[in-house]
Every structure is written in C-alpha cells, then in structure tokens.
Image (tube, helix red, strand yellow):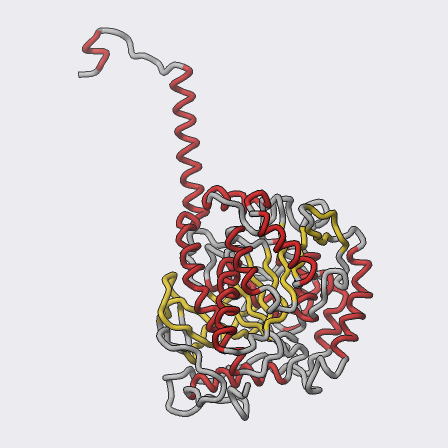
Length: 487
C-alpha cells in the first residue's frame, strides 16, 4: 500500500533543500567516478616539445654522431627492481617489488611501425605543427641480474658471464659516446614502465643520441588512489639504486654518473644517494657522481636535507628544480603532512638545517632553479612535469647533464635569495643567450680531456638479434672486446 492510500493525502513534492542535496549527491558521485577513472589513467607518453637548445643545435648534434641511428627506434639500458614476468627477451614487469636488480636493454618506438627517419627528423624540430607522436615501448630484454642477497663484488673479481656481457655493452656505448658519462633517469610515482621509458627516451633522443641513458624503473602502483604505497616502495627501491651506482662505478669505464630524478623519484634518488655516500666510505670506492638534478622532487623536505648532508660534496653539482605553485606537490603535502623538497617551506627546517643549506649553496655545488610561471611559456602556472613539458626547462636540464655547466654558464639569471639562499631563474632573453651557452659547451667537448677517443656513439646499444641470457647456451653477441673492464 502506498503512502497516499494509507494517509489519504496527496504525494509530497521534494522541497528546495532536498532537491539541492540530491544535486550535491549526484555531483559528488560524478566526481568520485571521474577520480577513479583518472586514478587508473596513464596518458600515453609523447615526444616532448622541442627543447630550446635542441632547436638551435639539434642538427649539429645529429651530424656529430657518425653512427646515428636513422630510424624511429630508441634503445636504452635499464635496471629495475620490479618483479619480472614472461620470457627474458621480452619482459613485462609487475607493480610489486622483486628481490633482484634486473638489468637489460629496452627499445622505444617513435610513432607508428615503419615511420621513416625523415618524419622523425621533422618531429624532432617541431616543424610540422602537428600533435606530437607517441613513444611506444616495444621490448624489454633482460640480459643480467644481481641477486638481492648478494653485495656488488669489488673491482677485480671475475663476474658472471651474463653480467660481464651487459657491462660490456655499457662500456662499448661509453667508449664511442660524445658524452662519456651515463645518465640514470629515475621516474615518478603512478607511472607505468612504458611511460617511464618514454620519458627516459627523451634524454637520449634530444641529445642527438649522443648520451648514454639508463632507466631505473622502480615499482609504482600505477594508480593515484594508492599513492602512499608508492612512497613506501620508493624508500624500498633506494638500496637497489645504490647497488646500481656501485656496480657502474666499480665495473665500467664511465667517467661520471649523472642522475635525473623526477617527482617521487626524488625520494628514491635522495635516499639512494645517501646510501651511496655511506657505502663508498665503507668500501672505499669512488662513486664517480657528476651532475645530480632533482626536478620537482616529491620528497619529504627534512628527509631530503638530511640525505643531502650525507652525500653533498660527492657529486660535482646538485640542482633542485622547483615550482612553488606546483599543484601535484600541494596535494602531496596534504597527504604526507609536510612540505616537499620541490615546494619547500623552510620554516619546517631547524636553524642547523638552514645553515647547512647556506653552506651547500655557497661551497658544495647546491644550486636551486626556480621555475616561475611567468617566466616559462610552455607550461601552466601549476605545472609539475615542467622538465619535459617546457622547452626552456628541458633545455636547461639537457645542457647541464650533457655538458656539466653551472646555472650561470647555462644562461640562467640570479634571483633574489631568501633565508640566505641564492637561486636561479629563466630570464626573458633566455633563448638569446643560448648561442653563447652552446659555443661554450662546444669548446668543452672539443677539449682532449672531455673525450678520450675520437669515436662517437655507436648505434645506441643495439641488441637487435641478440639473445637474452637463458635463451641460448652461447655467449652474448655484440658485447665489447673486454667486457666489464672498469678495472
């Protein structure tokens, strides 16, 4: 029996207040659905806007590489502590951590299958004005592993054949490189392996394939709703990052190991570098750290400064790129109940921490680059991914990593300091300064000390046709004549 039949009264119409609450509930439901969809959404990685320095010098960088790979594929080294699945010559990686440090080579494709180099060249300079092409992960070929219960062996002992082969490929790439350093890229939270590899591939491509790049792919949940879990796994990945640096420093001929961390990758790299410092003192090895650049680091500010105390002075330079309007780090501050290194609140620091930062700023190679929304034209005011989304910011990162120049020599201008700290900004005439910056960089490369051999980079670390370890009984194909020869 209906209410009308029971009472004999006509049905009541909802009042204004009830209708308002119904709309509020409806909008909240829509908002929840959108949040869930966005939490699981990882947009495809595309070729980033052309860095300003590359637009001016990219043709020369390509021409300087006689073994330039003239097709639409980019190959990188990789290391990961993700749990691996599938055959070793075509791995997929879970979102959960594994015990071992897995090492290999990954292939990323620019655009569709069969896209010609001429088309890639046009995209590289942004001359067509079309939407940027996707970067597609084609293959993850695992070639070696360092078991989780083993320490990195010191220089000298004979290594496992598969490990010697992988290290030999690294040495071969370095021996022919315009830049005899290696860049380790550490991605952020909520990132698939495909997206992380696409970001790392930008470093390789926009140096004219003249930089040796290694992706450190740590486990992320690939879901923003469980972001706190990513922060936990970031700390868990730091020891593996430290093992990777020790392996490269003690068993390859690398001149310097450069590090670019992004977002929550700053937690991995910050804690990892502190561990590198402790291990290098304990075991007496030189970690060979060069340029360290933390872009929009999503790391606890006090922990970040504490780590910096441990490793400051080991790298040639430590740069922190920050945007005080960063919307992602605003949210992270709420979730983590503390300011982040990429959007610091210096009032959280002790007087001793402030004094240390001032000293590091003056004497230990710490530089702060502030991305101010009014200075950059390629990103929004609250940008978090400015290092690869803005042509000026990307240009600055690439120049630092490839040539090791300080902020002044990279064309930046001093900004007004706070709390006794100096920082750098992008001046309005930044692009007009680039010809002089690039001339200075070219002079450095021409010095005999900068290049030990007259060779250039080979066809990346080409492993097409190579067999992944475990697939055949034969030794690796195409490794260096004296693999693993850092001794």
